[in-house]
Image (cartoon, rainbow, N blue to C red; front, side, top):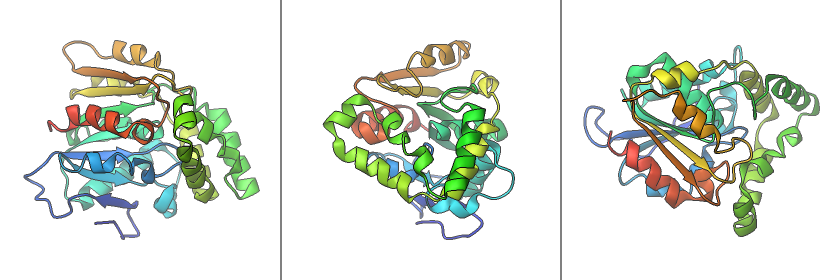
Length: 272
């Protein structure tokens, strides 16, 4: 099932007929900026036999460009994901957020912690800073609006894919570049402004009562894996925090190493 409602972000549901009160755990997939949920195409088949998957095009990106309305904010994006859960009849779900999707996952856990069974965070950080410095994102937003194309974010290809993936899987370079080129610059600019306005969510990560997975790539130049140690330090015992750093992997783990990413995600989300 795919969402066709104009008041909702686009999403698809791997098991639309599921009884909301029974059946498999639910896993929500939230993608990176300035991409869309097609970056989960390679991992999706490895998940759907174990969990019910909802993958969402975040407001402003992919097929949710028309959802880029109102004051840009990560919280507004999280509220949009909550509407998706409501529409799909899902009370509680594990949430996997990659980069910007991780910001949205943390905002979701802040807004409605009772609806998040686990946080599976990848290539992201709760702090305001690199790779999303507010002044830089505002400058990018202005340039996107001035030019009317996505060239100002074209270098996201290089930052998104690790060195190994670029050398060993050159088809991924073209795939990511194509997603960026096809994006609507107005929606991308709205998200860039939302990123510029985001706030520190370290207290959310520190206080989240459910399990947390920190899944990072050893070749990630956008959010270096050393960030993981700082995030683990936020989580006091006995809160459950799992850490995995994948070798020869960059920022977009599920795209670069789908089998390894699926294994790590299911180890946490599959227990829901």
